[in-house]
View 1 (cartoon, one colour):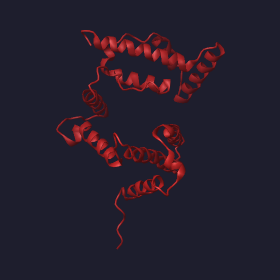
View 2 (tube, rainbow, N blue to C red):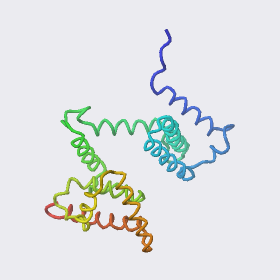
View 3 (tube, rainbow, N blue to C red):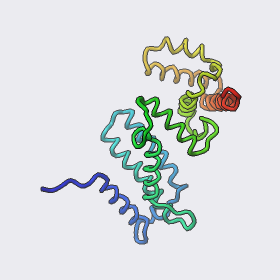
View 4 (cartoon, rainbow, N blue to C red):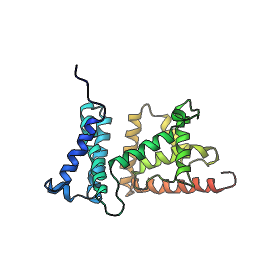
Length: 228
């Protein structure tokens, strides 16, 4: 009776294929790539993966996850060739394994967390302690799309929510959203807002970025206050 390959065995094969492509006698295009030259592909593959999830395309998702995984292996291989601060795919794997274990004390330790909300709160608290962060907003990339960054900032600020002043347009937003019947209608309203802003010569992305920056300043001021 033939046994099935162990989970992850083909990942080892992927690493071997990429190593051959980067080695002498391999592929000239792969051999000349750098971390910097691959950035556009990393971003593109991430967005294409998201698109397959949003389209509920399981076949496409399998392919895009492979493309995304290639980027991780590619960057690790490039890093392994560094003469100053080299690391390889095993170092990458070891790092995330250690992080997963330390961030899940309710599974691997004696901490109790019965709900997903408690798990998320513990995760952010442990992450802040590990990285010596002073604000819950630290570590949220400024380069994220404005809507994504806004969502993350609001989610992270849950720990100080009760101390924060109401958002300037909160009442108007609540009134508007109560009239919507679905998430699809919310999307249509956001699209209409972008179109209306464009009609007035305003950049909706830039406007939201500034509003998020202002809100981060408010959050950090609250955190720094005696009651924070």
